[in-house]
Structures are given as C-alpha cells and as structure tokens.
Image (tube, rainbow, N blue to C red; front, side, top):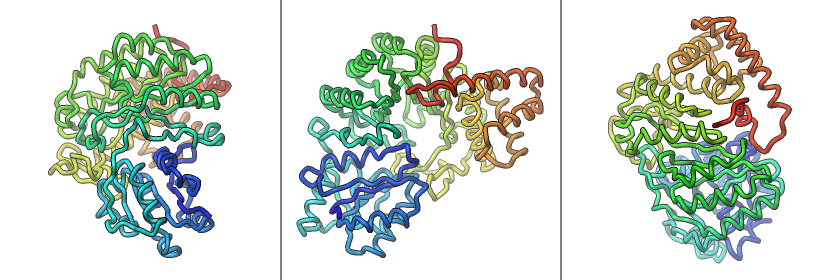
Length: 487
C-alpha cells in the first residue's frame, strides 16, 4: 500500500513526468509514503485504475496536460466510482487556468494551480492528519528556488537508459506573448548555480547523455548561461547531447565563442521565432529586432555545429497565408535545420483568449484554430497538412537533398496538395512509401524527373550511413549532419 500516489499520462514512454518528480522530491517526511506512477497515451484509464487499485492509496495526485486531459478526466471519474474514499488532487497547466470549468474539475477534491511543490506537500499533511481544508481551489505558494529540493536523484537507471532527462536552471519567462501561458508567469527566477551544476555532474556520472533543458529561454542571463555552457564544454568528450531553448536576439560574443566550440551532435538550439513579421510580433507582444534574430540564426547556422530548430505559428493576428509564406521563406533562408509549423491554439488563461475576434477554435484539446478573418477553414486545413508533410519530409532529415529541390513555401505547398489528393492521409506513411511518392509526385508539380531521382538516391545513401552510427545524438538530429561542416 502507498498513501500518496502521483500519476500522469505522458505523451509517450520516452518522456518523463518532471513536475511530479518535483512534487515527490519536496514531500519531506512523507516521501517514503509516496510513489510515482507514469503511464503513456497507449494506456487506457482502466489500465491505470488497476495499478492505482493495487496500491490502495489515500491520495492520488494527477498532473493534467493538454495531451492527456481526456484520459485524466476519465481516470478521475473511474477512481471516484470505484474508490470514492480516495482524495483526488489535480494540478498542471491544463487545469491551472480553467479550474472551475474544466471537465476534470467535477472529479477533483482539490485543485492546485501553478507551481505546486509547497502547496501539495502541505495539503497531503493536512489530509493524512484528518484536517482537510475547506476550499477545493488551493492558492499556490511560489517556492523559493534556492531552497527547493532538486528532483534529479529520482530519475531511475531505467529512465537514464531509455527516457528523456529534463533539467531546468531557471523558471519563468521575460516575454509576454499573448498566445502563450508563459505570459502569466512570475518574473524569471534562478536555481542556485552551484547546486544545479553539482546535480548535472552527478547525472553525467550516472550515465546521462541527453539533457533537455525546459528553461523558457536558456540564455536570458548571459553570464550564468555562459557558465553552464562552459561546464558542459569541458566535458564534451563524454559524448552528450543538450537541448536548449534560445532567444536568438540575445547571443553575446562570449556565448558565440562557447557555442562555436561544441562538437557536432552536442547541441540542439530551439530558437523562438513565431513570426518573421515585425507588425505581427508587435501584435502578440513579442517585439524585438527581427533583423537581429535573422542575423544571429544565420550566424549559428554557419559558425556552429548546433542543430537549429525554429518555430512559426499559423493563425497569428494579422497574418494570412501570403504573409506566413513570406516569413517561412525568410526563416528557411537562414539555414535552420527544422521549421516546426504549429497551428495557433486557444489555451485557457492565455491573454489572447480574452480578446474578441481572434477566430474560431476547436473546443476540445488541443484547441486549435478553425478559422479567422484571414484564414478560412479550408486554408487552415491546407496549412495543417503542409505542417504535417513538412515535418515528415523536410524536418525529419530523411530527405536533405530532396528538400533542397523543394526550395520554398509555395513549391512545397503544391506538393502537399498533390500528396493529400493522392493518398488522403497525413499519418502512417512508411518511409519507403514516402520515397516512392516523392519520386512520383515532384515531377507532377514541375520538378525535373532526373534531378528528383538523383536527389532521392542520394538521400537513400545518406539514411544508410546514419543507420550505422551509434551516437548520443537522436537519430532525427543525426539525419541533418551532412557532409559539410560550419565555417
């Protein structure tokens, strides 16, 4: 039996519940009476309930995210049907900002919005002492990061061998993008640098070789970020891989020197862009020097070995398909390896959700845009298909030579239209079938057949070379490591 059970559905097995590890690490004397159980989207609520039943907990803490909201709602309902005496406590970003009207709210005894390490531990002590609080919605108490117990010892050997290892050196976001829940964050706060680096050293000694930083913008504090980069740079012979979210306009000369010194396969930089149109960026309260953003991304592409991942959002206020296309081509020309095209979501709590006339959105998770004044439903669906095919063909790295033939937005959109007309699906396309569909379809939109065949054959040889490598770098990023190296 376990008194306190912490439960969630991760998006996939390789992910880990970072937030729940923080809750477990900060339970103090109750930690020995608690256990963390992780499921994935492949598990049903009934399967999860069976595990919970076997533990016979008194408290079940559930972390709710956009990807698991439906499963969590079903699980909470089942718990209350089969184990009505159990206290169900919910938290996480999906329920934090719509706690009163979220479907899962009906089945929660208590809801803790925001950062819950302090509030959850206090609630558990009250419940186990027979002193339940009267209010269901518990105000969070913002923890002091310098005194918060770090959760990294709770990564198991199994996690280290097979799963994502999330770490964070700071919390909060300085930006106030109206489409993002981070706009509601408190000011940026930082963990004790010495404690953080000591924890990273321990993880390295335990064999961790992939670190995914969840800092909203890793490089906000230049000197601190440089110290962390220098720490890893001194140890790069261990063969690790770092994923960092970067503000591309904030790269100091000292940081450039550090970034340029990392070997191929060590770094992935996720650079926040959202839109390349200054007027659109101003409208979403993400102003900044877009020319500086562009220049620094080009510099990263040509002077470092970092794998560059950038994002653009379809449906931002004031940006139709032609404006999006212009920004896409401009970003593509910087040399980024991946452009993730996302569809605007109306997340409860984000500042934009309070604005009128921003469009119609699906009421069910993930709350994506259906249409707005510049993009009707058919255009949104067309761009959704574009995004899916671009990710499968261009971002995957499986077709680097073929991607160079596609060149720009309108060419790929034409192929995307042809491909959907041909197969009426955006999912479940095997790699070999996709190879054949490119060979068949690209000449249909005007590309030279011989040139297409030569590019695809070069891509096949490229994939075969990658398959033979065994590196810490994820295969997707390895695919983008081609013959040339940055100057």
